[in-house]
Amino acid sequence: MAREIKGRFFLVGCPRSGTTLLQSLIVAHSQIASFPESKFFQKIVTSQSIYEKFNLAPLTARKVFNSFLEDIDSSDLKNLLPLNAVFIPQYVDSFIKVLDTVTLQQEKNYWLEKTPEHLRRINVIEKLVDGAKFIHIVRNGVDVVASLYEMTQKYPEIWGQPRELEQYINRWENDVLISSRHLHKPNHILVRYESLLANPTTTLEEICKFLEVTCEPSMLQNRLNVSSNLIRQREHWKQLVNENLRKPNFDKFYRIFDDSQREYIVTRIQQSNLDLDNLPQSNEGDVVTDCPCLI
Image 1 (cartoon, rainbow, N blue to C red):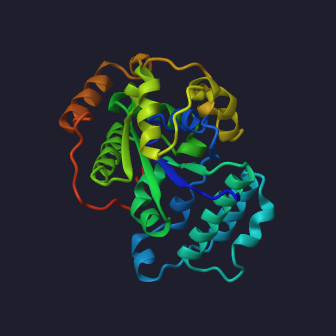
Image 2 (cartoon, rainbow, N blue to C red):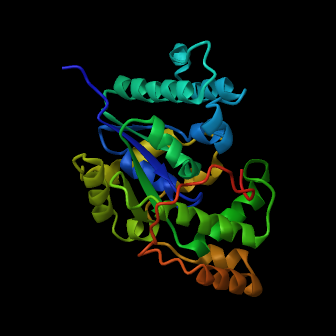
């Protein structure tokens, strides 16, 4: 019997919230394929107004498409994108065909696409990708702010120049709110980073139930075997995912920031009034414009 794609999954969240770790755990499943971050929708859908009015893809769209094929060693699939493609739905259709094809070539039935910034493209993905399911991961704001700050300090050429603390806090706050606006939908699930580390087995069972796949006990053990295939050589900051699971701590927060900075961050996060265990939900859509604090 010929294989067929049974599930298309997207893993999203604020950057530095544990998306790479969770990706490595999920794709340790024998039937789920995955890939390095594509940033495809982030780069193809660059303006809500352009998308709504004209559906036109940016001039760089073909380069984005071909670059991703090179990253996954599938340049032979360039023919899946029509030579006359100019519209966003054409590019999305071809992109999904690539993910489907590569997954079936690996003799698997499901795939997971992980790009944190696709959190801000959910409405577009839901319109153009049949049966898409979304896994949101949310992490304590103090840890996220510390990690975002550290990334811009260490890798400004990739993450952008260091910004004001307020911008890091706003990024975390806005992304958590975007997640909350989709949690009333049956095709969305929320994962707490801290719960994942504290109870990985239980958390994976809940995720697998949502994805409608059988949870495999070997997923925890097999994680390290697949994680290296998900990380590009230049993505040095993701190498920690190859280490054993560790419970969260605040060492980085205290190491990076001085007393006044720590006080400011904690106060601002408390003022945001976000209860991560009981996130507010609304029917408002996500935004497409990008936060200036990160690339």
